[in-house]
Amino acid sequence: MLGAADISATHWIVFVAAVLVFLALDLGVFHRKAHVVRFGEALLWTAIWFVTAMAFGLLVAPAIFPDWQSQQTYEFVTGYIIELSLSMDNVFVIALIFAYFRLPERYQHRVLFWGILGALLMRGFMIGAGVVLIQRDTGGNLAEILDNLAHVVRERFKIHRQIRVHTAHGRFTGYVLMALPAALAVALNFINPEHMQLLFHEHMGQMMLIGAIVMQAIGYVWIRQVIKIEV
Image (cartoon, rainbow, N blue to C red):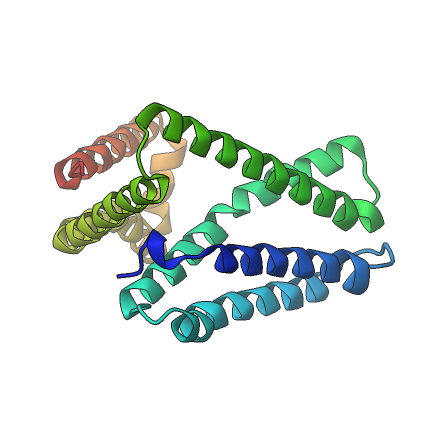
């Protein structure tokens, strides 16, 4: 198992240097001149950075760290995919901000770059301040404290994955029960459209639809609570 003690200052220096090099290449070389980033270019760069991350987790890290195991690769790839998925909400927020301030498209990449750089600096400052506060309040070896904390987090995620495996049948049953009425409604609409139109145009039909939707929502929440296990 790779621990905090296996990560030396050299690793951190190389990591920070690599991030700075990539940022410099992004703004100083590939996007030196402000221009409108089209869909094809954005998709290409997304693929390049994705392949770079996968190459690190699958090839580079196992070669650098002797204790790197398949579990670390799994955790790295899982964390990267999750963060990539969660970043979509940031894309929508950024698009709304750019639209509100009517920022020209040709300058959006540059503004976004400096915003990300500022976020990195602020996060680094907050992490450093948090580390200092933890060491001041707890004392002892900071590396050991962080290693124990990381171990607890890893074990928590491991238990969470095991619980998801054991409750997969319940989740699948819930999804089927939720999708069944909608699928049945679509099938009936194809078989006899006139009968389905009564649900939308008649008052009683509308009340039945509202009741069905409410019951579906209650059933969904109930099934979620039944199969939900707090870790």
